[in-house]
Image (cartoon, rainbow, N blue to C red; front, side):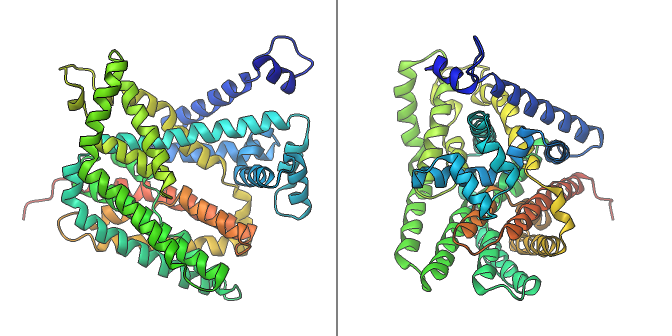
Length: 465
């Protein structure tokens, strides 16, 4: 099979590993991440800011030079759309790319890549980037969950629920009315989708900042993590309502109830029975592989819980966080200096930065030159900040409201996913999708800066009266 794949990619060559270019791709991404983190350290900023920034710079330079790898990553969302539609309609990927390019739904540059002689190589490279980056954010959220306990989550559960619900409702309202202000000529469906796009928090960015400042065990961080899990559920419910209104003109009550029931069963079962079930799983798997059980068993749980969360229409990162929440060294019995955290941390250190570099690689700075796109992006960014600032205000006086609010500001993969659904329904245009990408990038850049300042401000000793 490997030999056959080699002939498909490079039929004229001799002994060539068909996936060697994936290794080069991985080397480039790791090098970019290391460089970005070094630059961030030199200017005393969080590592995630350097990873995002270096991705933006390298991505736009590579795209301007027409380097195929950077062109592919810049249009990764469109590439996914092409592959998905090709699979659903049983049409060749090259033909689908050509058809969508003619219809002005995807970039001609991407269509050229997917119809050219190296199309299969491009598809493999894009798939590899997607796998590496998503693995990174799953590992990051697992590590965040690993540093938290079920009892600690229960302690902040009520407050986190309030923060999540206020944040979702305020963000939806801010996005809806901001859309009406910035795009008065757009239809009601557009304004509704702009509202739902702003609902979900991309907690991975904030988690990385808390982690880098050794504050991931603070009460503020736990409220942010707990609220992000709950607002993931709430955001999907709001999306179901909006899609029902857009497609049928009414709310699909059964769909909404199904999501609520499944999410409640998953999260409630995790909190009530997760540790008991995991204890039995660990004892069974440890009997099969005792020497490396502390590494392999957590990985199995991470992937299994991520899959289960997706099956229940939740974000995979919610499952990854849950897996880390319920696993612990106490399940493995023997006393040892080797912990689950020490074994998993090297994996997280390699792959988590790739997620943020890839996010930066997908930001096309040339879209800032379009006044309508820029205006929509700025209005959405302001609405995104206002909505989650309200969430922080609702956190109460036992924690730092500013820190909680800033921790909830970043938007990421779910905002892009919701926007792509809007495009698929014919509600959003490519220009508005660009505005969403810019909003995601701005919140991803602004939140770490503000969050670091807020945390450092708390740590400074206050002058005596």
